[in-house]
Length: 256
View (cartoon, helix red, strand yellow):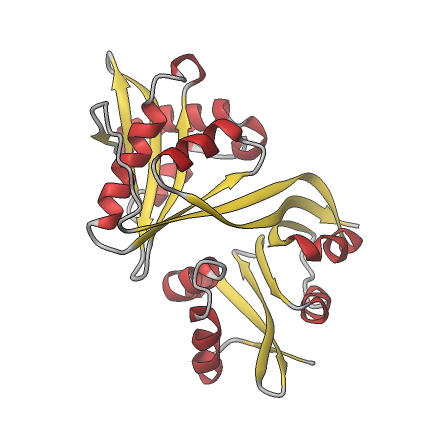
C-alpha cells in the first residue's frame, strides 16, 4: 500500500472517492476547498485506488477514513503529540494503540435533506456579531465544559467572517446560540447551545429551525454532528427532521 500526499495530480481520484459519500467525507472536501493552506491530506493507494484517507488540519485536528489496513498505514504516518481525532468506530483499537485519550465519546452525524424539514421557529432570532462574542463564549463553556473549555472570545471573533452566528435574546441577554456555514453542496450547523437557566423553552428548536431554513434556501441538505449521549439535543434535531447517518469514535488525546 502506497501513502501519498494529496496534490493536483491526485485530485481527480480524490474527488471521485469523496463524492461517493460526501457526508462521510465532509471535512475532507470542506478543508481541501476552503482551508487548503492549513490542511494536509494523505491518501492510502492500492493500484491507484483509494483505500483510505487521513486529513490533518492545523497540525492538531485529524480525520481518518478507510479500510483497516489503510487506517493502520495512515496512522503510521501520524507524528503529532496531541490530537483531536475522528474516525469510524472500527478503527478505535488502532488509534488507542498510539494515543491515550484525555477525553473520548461517540459522535453522531445527522442529515436533513430538502423536503424533510419540519420548521418550528417560535422565538425571534437575531444575527450576532463581535459585540456578542463574550456571551457566546460563556454559553459554550457552560453548556459543555469538557468540549468547549478552550474556546476564546478572540477565536470566535476571528472566525465570524466565515460563519453565520445567530441567537435568541431575553431582556437583552443572550440565552441561546447557533453557528452555521454554507458550502457548495450542503450547509453545516456547527454549534447549538442554550444557557442552562433557559433550557426546555424551545429556544434550541427555534435556532435549529432558523438555521435549516437559511441553509435550504441555498443548498439541498444540512448536516449536524452531535455527541451520541446528548439525548436532549438529538430529540431536538429529530423533531425538526434530522435523521442519524453514521457514528464515529471521537477523542482528544496525547501520544503514548
